[in-house]
Image (cartoon, rainbow over all chains, first blue to last red; front, side):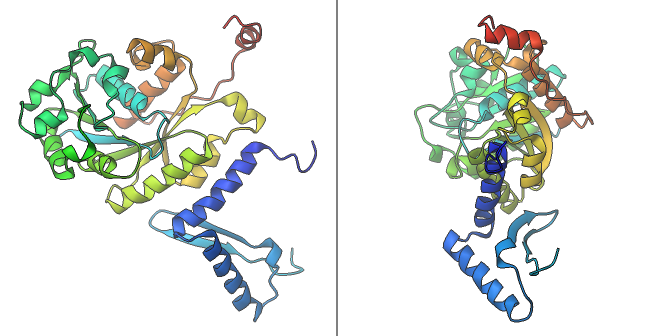
Length: 77
Length: 264
């Protein structure tokens, strides 16, 4: 299988997770991008963030909904 | 008697709310419960035809709230099972003909006599949905393994929680093991991970549903149908039984062969 020949299920799951982040925080895609960029800006003042690998998700847990963001550091594994 | 009220909802239309309501109600009655199904989809009534009771409607839910008849007069008794009733929606009125307060009152009255009240919610998140959830103790969300349906289910979970209906459960309907295996359909785990709510049942895609709807006989009455078994299991879980999920079965070699050559 070619590497870009991703299973459609994985595509669906990724698209769904992305759209649910927006639905759950009630932000437009533009606002999401703006928030993300601002977060990168703030964090970059202190640490070396790898902006290509950032993941943001809004997760529903037992008693709350939480924005869970992952900012990997550059050059880290 | 203090019955429990369960609302069957989804947000998105066409995912199997009415079929699920009919079968859960029927399966609960098969377990010996006294059950009243309420069609809350005023203006687009369909639970009557899925149940095969469309020819017996005299009064409907709007007649009851407007005091044109007594509640018992509008309740159709299903002759196939003792203790199974349907309160039909009105067809020529709109969603505003019943208020959430009236719905609550109606359900309180029914609870005195019923073990379970199963409310079939309309699609959408407007007035009809608000009416449907008004008197509910418990919510079951129906979804299918499609992005649009899961997205709407997620939205409904948020709305239910805002209305104080905590811990809704989900039925994943129309799942196809062969497509999940190929990686072309989201699996149960994917959807549960995303929605973060409890699973109360998995209903496999089953052609028998179309046949049973054609005849007005809920598939829960069919001992041999996989989907019927799935709904009977859901009813038992609703009653508190800790029943394992049926494994998703792929078609047997013979069935696949028959499909291939057009015999099945």
